[in-house]
Length: 427
Image 1 (cartoon, one colour):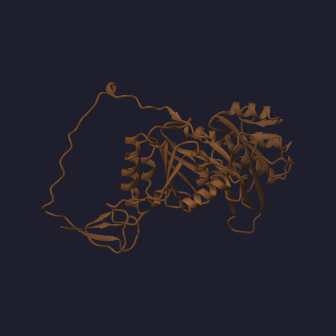
Image 2: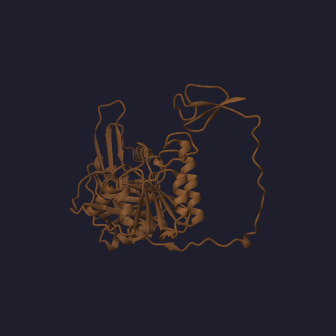
């Protein structure tokens, strides 16, 4: 019996098609014939174990040289942990790895850069490479055998990037979905059996998603995303998944001529020149165990379009539409005659609902031309009924704001509704 398999994604089909229905690639379906003489694989013997007989996992953490990375991971790297590190090209992933791992015995496997390029970057950033070994072997079988034959295992292994690793048993090009599945599964098995933690670098698409199958995220122990605008000096490291820690913590870095510098100042994203102008508000947000403050800017201009423009950067677009609807419903302010532009200063993303109140304040400020004090912070979630809800860590945010000499704080205990907020900032 003949059947067809896509050489790119492994999708099966009973008949030949010019385009794969799964990955949409052309001319990738290859005919296969099922051999009648092929013997079926031997059935594995099912076994079960009592949990009381299982030895607990060794969760002693190996700390890196970067506290902000250790914070995101939950205190350091766990034995046998596999970490997927993603980010836009040029955001600083390689720089972060060099600064992080230069005090650990590291095996750096790279298909993206030559050893000369890596050494040149390290010399430029004054990073010693005495503990780092380099390899350009990209075949996963060779990597597996080479690591297992080492007399002394390294402290950590870096794969840069997974899109360049391939298996000799898969007849497709490196970077295809089938190759990614096979290579990642083999590397994870290597890490678990040897106990050597591994950092796998993965490309992202133009939409910001991890290139390749979504199953890559489910296979690894932690998924870290390194984000930030290239025109901005600031970078944020977030954990989208972490089996050995929390996903609430973030790491903040500043890109300098000497590499990435750790940032622990909660007001680093605020303008040093405190000017009271319409359209600017300060959002207090809890990121993990520490409060941070972000500057939200809004600009409203008269619209001559049938559908007014809504341009949003650094915030969730759909959430902005929701907040605009709440303003129009409960304050009876017609925003359909305005083009609205909103931005978070610093080129960072703010995803917490605690920023709702600051967004609403910035919109009201620019539409009604009401200057807001640069020493005022807003924190709170806005409901569809116009009520202001308490957010996680609200007390910590208010206490930190008082310590930093913010003279006024608007939050759920100060304002109960968006109507009350509008009344207070208008006076």
